[in-house]
Length: 270
Image (cartoon, rainbow, N blue to C red; front, side, top):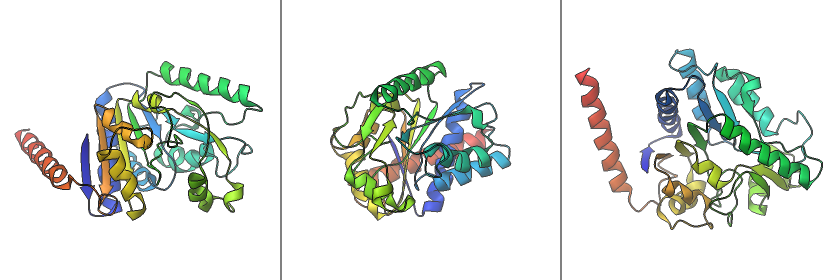
C-alpha cells in the first residue's frame, strides 16, 4: 500500500486526482471504468478532475462510472439520492455522459426486488470489465461504501442496514437523522477488492482513528476499510489531521520521497 500525506485538503485533492488520471490513462482501455464515491471526502478530488478534463489531460466521454452505493426508499429525483449527487458533482463538471453513470437500484418495492437489483448490478460491473480506479472515502466507524463494521470481507453487492453512527453522520445532508434512510444497497467489500486500483481519500481529525485502524490495524470485519491492506494496488492520500495517529508515518514519508525522486529522474531522462 502507498500512503501519501499532504499538508492540506487542497493538496490531497490535487495528488488524488493525479492517482486517478494515472490509473485511468494507464489502463489503456477505450472505455475505462471509474468507481465513484459520494460524501464530502471526494468533493475536492472531483473538482481537480474537472480541471484535468478542462486542460485536456483526461477525457471521460467514453468512460463508465459505477457508484459504490445508494439509499433505499428515496423518491426518484431526491436531491440526496446518490444518483442525483453524482449527476451534479461528476457527470456535469467532468463530462461523463449521464447514460454512462450506473448506480445500485434502491427503488425495489420489497426485499426480493432489492436483492435482484443488487445481483444485476454485480453482473453489470462484470460486463463492463471491472473497475479501473475505485475512489473511496472512509466513515468515522471505518465503513467503506456502506459496508458497516461486521461486514463480510468477501461480500458482494447487497442490501444493508445503516448503523446509527452512519445515519447520524449523514444527517447533515438531510433535515435531521429521522429523514436519513435506514437501508442501502452497497457494493460489497469483495466487489470493491476486484477493482484494479483503490484510492482512499481522507481529511480531518474526525477520520484519524478510522484511518489508523484501516491502514495499520488488523485485517478485520470490525474495520471494513482494513481490506485495503489486502489489495495489490491501494493508495491512501491523507492530510496531516487524518494521518495524525499513524505509527509508521516516518516510513511512509521516506517511501513517498523515494518514489518522487525516481519519478523526477525518469522524467529528466526523457
